[in-house]
Image 1 (spheres, helix red, strand yellow):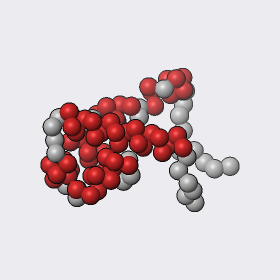
Image 2 (tube, one colour):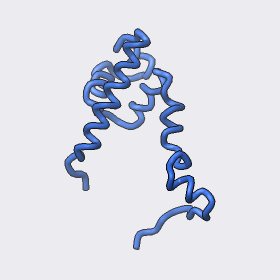
Image 3 (cartoon, helix red, strand yellow):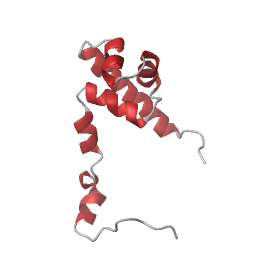
Image 4 (tube, rainbow, N blue to C red):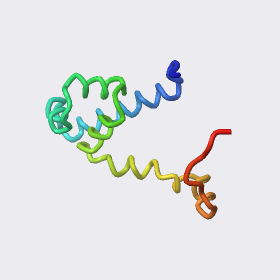
Length: 99
Protein backbone atom coordinates (compact mmCIF):
# COMPACT_ATOMS: atom_id res chain seq x y z
CA UNK A 1 0.00 0.00 0.00
CA UNK A 2 1.63 3.21 -1.17
CA UNK A 3 1.42 6.32 0.92
CA UNK A 4 2.67 9.85 0.71
CA UNK A 5 6.31 10.19 -0.36
CA UNK A 6 8.52 10.75 2.70
CA UNK A 7 10.15 14.19 2.78
CA UNK A 8 13.76 12.86 2.57
CA UNK A 9 12.80 10.77 -0.48
CA UNK A 10 11.08 13.73 -2.18
CA UNK A 11 14.13 15.89 -1.49
CA UNK A 12 16.45 13.23 -2.92
CA UNK A 13 14.26 12.95 -6.04
CA UNK A 14 14.53 16.70 -6.61
CA UNK A 15 18.29 16.70 -5.98
CA UNK A 16 18.92 13.82 -8.37
CA UNK A 17 16.74 15.49 -11.00
CA UNK A 18 18.71 18.72 -10.58
CA UNK A 19 22.00 16.82 -10.91
CA UNK A 20 20.87 15.04 -14.07
CA UNK A 21 19.70 18.29 -15.62
CA UNK A 22 22.97 20.01 -14.73
CA UNK A 23 24.93 17.15 -16.33
CA UNK A 24 22.76 17.46 -19.45
CA UNK A 25 23.40 21.19 -19.69
CA UNK A 26 27.14 20.81 -19.01
CA UNK A 27 27.35 18.35 -21.90
CA UNK A 28 25.34 20.75 -24.09
CA UNK A 29 22.69 18.11 -24.82
CA UNK A 30 19.28 19.48 -25.68
CA UNK A 31 16.21 18.03 -24.02
CA UNK A 32 15.03 16.82 -27.41
CA UNK A 33 18.31 15.05 -28.18
CA UNK A 34 18.41 13.43 -24.74
CA UNK A 35 14.86 12.17 -25.21
CA UNK A 36 15.69 10.80 -28.66
CA UNK A 37 18.85 9.03 -27.46
CA UNK A 38 17.02 7.53 -24.47
CA UNK A 39 14.10 6.53 -26.70
CA UNK A 40 11.69 8.51 -24.50
CA UNK A 41 9.27 11.33 -25.15
CA UNK A 42 10.29 14.91 -24.42
CA UNK A 43 7.52 15.34 -21.79
CA UNK A 44 8.72 12.18 -20.00
CA UNK A 45 12.31 13.45 -19.89
CA UNK A 46 11.18 16.92 -18.84
CA UNK A 47 9.11 15.48 -15.99
CA UNK A 48 12.04 13.40 -14.78
CA UNK A 49 14.52 16.27 -14.97
CA UNK A 50 12.17 18.82 -13.39
CA UNK A 51 10.49 16.78 -10.65
CA UNK A 52 12.45 13.57 -10.38
CA UNK A 53 9.24 11.76 -11.27
CA UNK A 54 9.33 8.76 -13.54
CA UNK A 55 10.19 5.10 -13.69
CA UNK A 56 13.43 3.59 -12.51
CA UNK A 57 14.12 2.35 -16.03
CA UNK A 58 13.74 5.84 -17.50
CA UNK A 59 16.05 7.22 -14.81
CA UNK A 60 18.69 4.64 -15.75
CA UNK A 61 18.22 5.31 -19.49
CA UNK A 62 18.94 8.99 -18.94
CA UNK A 63 21.85 8.24 -16.61
CA UNK A 64 23.36 6.01 -19.30
CA UNK A 65 23.17 8.75 -21.92
CA UNK A 66 24.80 11.20 -19.50
CA UNK A 67 27.62 8.77 -18.66
CA UNK A 68 26.51 8.16 -15.06
CA UNK A 69 25.19 4.61 -15.22
CA UNK A 70 28.29 2.83 -13.90
CA UNK A 71 28.60 5.25 -10.99
CA UNK A 72 24.98 4.59 -10.03
CA UNK A 73 25.54 0.84 -10.15
CA UNK A 74 28.69 1.26 -8.03
CA UNK A 75 26.86 3.51 -5.55
CA UNK A 76 24.36 0.73 -4.84
CA UNK A 77 27.02 -1.89 -4.18
CA UNK A 78 26.33 -3.19 -0.66
CA UNK A 79 30.05 -3.74 -0.10
CA UNK A 80 30.46 0.06 -0.11
CA UNK A 81 28.52 0.34 3.17
CA UNK A 82 29.89 -0.39 6.65
CA UNK A 83 27.22 -3.07 7.24
CA UNK A 84 27.86 -4.64 3.85
CA UNK A 85 31.58 -4.84 4.49
CA UNK A 86 31.02 -6.31 7.96
CA UNK A 87 28.58 -8.91 6.62
CA UNK A 88 30.73 -9.80 3.62
CA UNK A 89 32.69 -12.20 5.79
CA UNK A 90 29.53 -13.89 7.05
CA UNK A 91 27.23 -16.34 5.35
CA UNK A 92 24.53 -14.26 3.57
CA UNK A 93 21.16 -15.98 2.98
CA UNK A 94 19.80 -16.26 -0.56
CA UNK A 95 16.51 -14.75 0.60
CA UNK A 96 14.99 -13.35 3.77
CA UNK A 97 11.72 -14.82 5.00
CA UNK A 98 8.94 -12.96 6.78
CA UNK A 99 8.29 -13.90 10.38
